Length: 365
Ligand code: 13P
Image (tube, protein in one colour):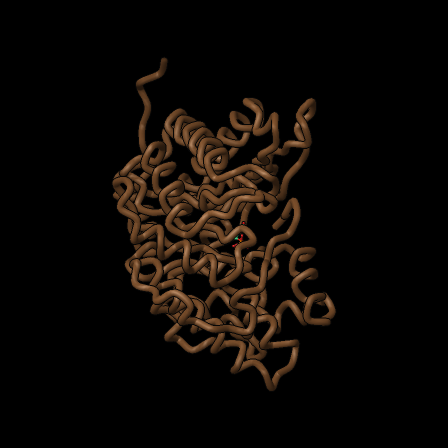
């Protein structure tokens, strides 16, 4: 066993912790706007907008020119590579627009999932090879944090030992490379909601997956105070015949985290994982109200679909709808900001797509 190792030096530790703490400041969370070109294409197709560079740029411009009050509830935004290097109509780089609002830019650095040979359709995530150079460049270009998503599936025989071990290890390698380059790694082991499994099975799988992840982060000497976790909430499978209420989801989620996640980690930024906007807000609120276990970390949001569904529907690709779409974003961010403090009044935030199901089978991001 190796017990001789170093954490990053004091300056770097300070920088990483400062960023991580700022992202999970009370009442704040992340807007995940890091959809790949293909995924953005699906979102745009839903509102009959063609998937061109220019339309993706116009949509992201809508997000990033939202009134600066957005920063009261949004501390960070995750970008896709293409978006990081796009500009406003007037030539201002998006990354400057975001920073000037007091919002921290982040970047998706994984390169998607690939099959694990011999497994039952399980995957790992690729992108390590040139990661250090990319992280160094992203830091220079204004990013302070990164995201890498791994995916685990619940079936009768999965997740397998192979998938849990490999995904935990690749997340740990990613996290250490980010920290070396001054980026806070958001560690995202997503247990997918596909399937008929119940809440108890989802909880047990999430606990095991997180235990693997924190063992690997320790093995790689990752400085936990300068990381964030982006897990799934513990929910029953989409096709589970039994329905569980928000208090039950909250209890299962908080228990799973308390059993596996060190108190040194500043916070959890949950993904929405196909929940409707309102469901994702109510669940986050219930999690923050839950007293079933100790919660020594901030518990907030890093939502993609559950922050953008109403925005997209309100926009419809039309300039005259931009203001209305931006108002939807502000409303939902406020609701989630309240939920991150256990202060959301359930049902009070009505939106264009508040209750619409956002589940996508076998979801890729
Ligand atoms: P959803 O909130 O749409 O699940 O996505 C968040 C994300 O960043 C997934 O990687």
